[in-house]
Image (cartoon, rainbow over all chains, first blue to last red; front, top):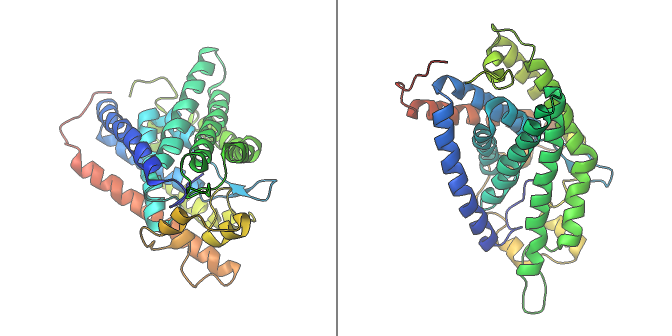
Length: 230
Length: 105
């Protein structure tokens, strides 16, 4: 789901960057207020987990690949604002060191994977928990819907390119496939396989975190899950 | 702490499994793949193709990708470098956050 360099017009990159700046500003403020210094290692672990989980490409039936993000898992354990910061840092490292996702496209990629995915996932999780459902299952369903909303956002950003940015004769200047191809392709990969991987990982880790003892460093990461005020 | 570190080491060693999936992600093609698919390379795509040089492009060592073993080693190295970079950034953040803001839990 990492949009590469040159796929989005500079205008699109600018708009998405402008959307992300206030989100990052609010996220930093919220995290500074809610969490204290002792939680920083937890956020680092969350970012590292998200980074590494994205390296596990899974095959999609149409011959492409996709991967989980861990966005809802981070939102459920650290809170959605901390998830935004942690996943953003993972995405920044991926684009700067490994060329996974464009540097100019960081605004768009962070919007999709570090904002849409964790926040949608978290809201769905809260909703299902209110219905007295099991938290691991609630997180898994949230994760599935969250990653698919992120895929929908990425497909929309890509699919808008040929519509908005083309030469006088109609040839695309940037990403050449329209919404009619980009959205189904992005959703197919995540509805069929990547979303299920995201859901299973999230459900299993939440299940595990609910059971770790106080002596485990991850106990701190599960305070949110136990309903403990952090 | 030890358990978490062991967990991460296991994940790092397993990362090459992510290389086994055939093909590339939809909408993450290189310029040659674009040309193959669309018949031409859109002007803006080639113009912005390389904004910065990456240390480990595509999670691998340039030229050291002749076989799966080489790619796997490059991938594992990338996982280690990436996690180290993330740890460094959060270490810097921790340095910047003032100590006095201790909260009673």
